[in-house]
Amino acid sequence: MSDFIQTSAARALENTVQDHFIAAEAPWSGIVRKGQIIRIEDSYGQQAIDTLFYRADDFSERYSNQDTMRMQGGAYVGIGTKIISSEGNVMLTMTADSCGRHDTSAGACSCESNTVRFGHGTKYLHACRDNFILEVSKHGMSKRDIVPNINFFMNVPIKPNGEMTIVDGISAAGDYVELLAEMDVLCVISNCPQINNPCNGFDPTPVRVLIWDGED
Image (cartoon, rainbow, N blue to C red):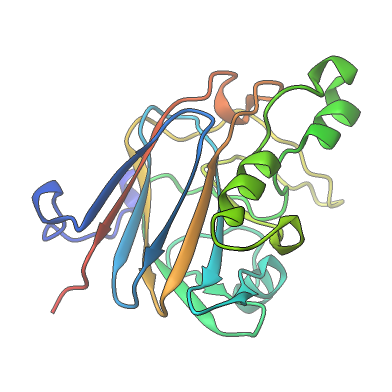
């Protein structure tokens, strides 16, 4: 969906400063410095990528989905969206998007929600909340520090009455978003392991994260 792309030819694989492959169902975290561009790529298509951001020098300041939606007056994130922190500061700005649909309302899957929605037989399955807990613990945080997240590439139509439904993703292999860091941030990702609804096409796949220094 090239109508959504606004990126630079100067960003190529040979001049990345970080290049990470995230296995299917796995977590990842890393620092993105102010002025750098982070690209989050849905390498195989139809893969939800649950993402959180924290201020790198003060983790108590973190992504706020309520303030982000209120600031832009919309339920989804896209090109031009300012990613707003719990302190009302701009953390990142989305500068490119080849997909056009990214949720920030439905939250992360958990063993508890899986059990309620899909039955007790799914309680043992790995979930995004497990990934987030594992990854933030590496930075001295706990489950208390996990807040409602962005679901890049997850398709969640919202009806006029407010009802939400997770449906088949529309992202194709290689679709990506790019965000410009407006401050030093810690990015925490859960490459969603959900297999009970269509957010991952019932087949979780690897994704990729690339980071470039800012352009002069």
